Length: 280
Image (cartoon, rainbow, N blue to C red; front, side):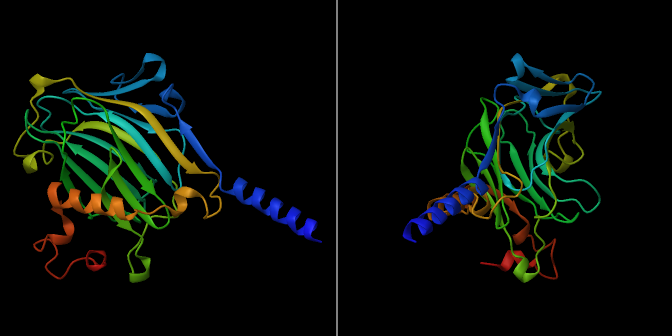
């Protein structure tokens, strides 16, 4: 009988391990396996046998790409080198999104700058077509000098935005207090480089200098860790949360580098802040 119980326990353990397998797509060797250039008429390119992807903007058009796969929860990493020099008016968007008017979306947007001034990292979360949850940051390095890793962790409990493995923002699942959370719509990964000089730099005061064109952003080392077929909630990325060390990193980044938080904008919410702003 003891032998039978041991065999059953072993079988259950094997089943659990299989159900918790993580599928890791690491296409650093060939980005063409994971992405399609979707617009820009040759301004988006996959180079060096798929090791590098570039998007270009000129005074005629920008460009963009989209992932071939959809993701429902996981951790997405991409190394990006942003447009150097005077990039005022340009926006490099990097985001997860589903489709339709009631779409979900998780946004990084990098707002261009005048030479020598910091980039603005704009973040937002949409649920069921509604966003308006902006937080903005300055980076603690020049994101145009080299590639840096920009990550989105997304699971049923939380969304965490990270830069070089340092968390800068967390959006928790607060459905228990009536805050919608994206958890049922699979999303693709998108990126685009486009002209938004009506709002991107100093609220549109600084326009794009087309004498600086073409503008180019570069991408490499894409990595997607996702759970296979919505496997068991024991899957690592489905239960991951910030530990105390990373919670402290998050607090310090927000204290030092956050330049806008919708949860402190009284002019925007004269009748009171959204409920997630008051959650602890």
